[in-house]
Length: 461
Image 1 (tube, rainbow, N blue to C red):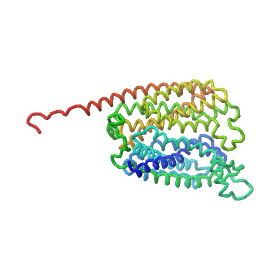
Image 2 (cartoon, rainbow, N blue to C red):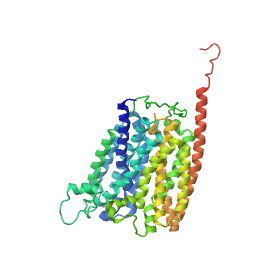
Image 3 (cartoon, rainbow, N blue to C red):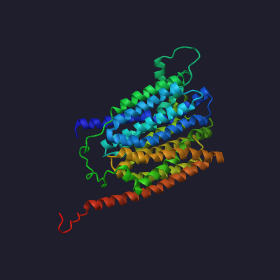
Image 4 (cartoon, helix red, strand yellow):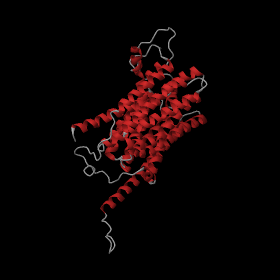
């Protein structure tokens, strides 16, 4: 492998992280909720529809985006995604008014969700093709930024989106920069939601386009120096297109396992802040000297940090012990965490629970793309994983809704977390089925590759 090829490998990871950190800010939607409710007098349901629209569009757009990037490459498709994401905020600043909440659904929800869906699959696909020798680890790195994006974004955004002070003094660019970097708390100043939407839209567009410029596919037939599928004991397989993939029991079980695992995680994460706030009774983990950086050691911040780390951790583990075994271990550990969580009362147990749940939830987003590439090849990975990822869209609806219904019915979180734990145990059992189906598929492929050709009938050539 030449120095140039090695250089390209690392630049792809750098581009992936830049793109994913920006896309991951979608999980910090809650910072927009209160300012918009105060500005327009909207209720919580009105604002939440925008977030639901964004997640649903994100999941659905993965299919055409994956197909398109398989054809024209990741750079162009990710660039389109960055432009759409930036435009969603710019248009929102122009169109959203008190009597037009639908404009927020259309701009942030549909246009922004489409932009995220267009760009999300591109870094993963490019990274897997450049690193067939480290699929799990590299996939985890490629999507770690998405898990950390909300953590990096939420604190500064919550300050900048505040209404401007009544003093009339102009806010300097240096102040905006310090707050944006999380260095300063901002002393209560803000630039208002409209100006923030414009600023964030421009930053999103520029950053994603710059990250996309670093994405590219390797040359046809590329293999890292000193590595080959045979020498690495890679299981025999072939590139499969999406209609053929969807016709296999293996893809169906992957999809259902993803739904159960992601539903349990989203059910808990959607209620994490009110749950932990109720237990802590207004106390904070962070000492005063940490200032604005204290958010990194609060329960939601700890969960976000370990969500990002879990993608790298479980990706690496799956490279060592294979994907289904890693899934089984991860879901069993997560199920036990939810069962123990119902009795968590002390700050230490809350800290550990936040870290453990985040670590295991993040692993979903490293294991399923890696498994999709393992079993169905990398040539059509974009659209193949787009179809598998629709499971997350289903979980995004089921998890928060079921969790909310269980809480409303019982006015307690215990039943919700017990149910989440049961879903994890079921997902762990399904991982065993995935393991068996994958082994049967590999055995069949190996037998077909060693079977002698059938001789032609006499008199035919």
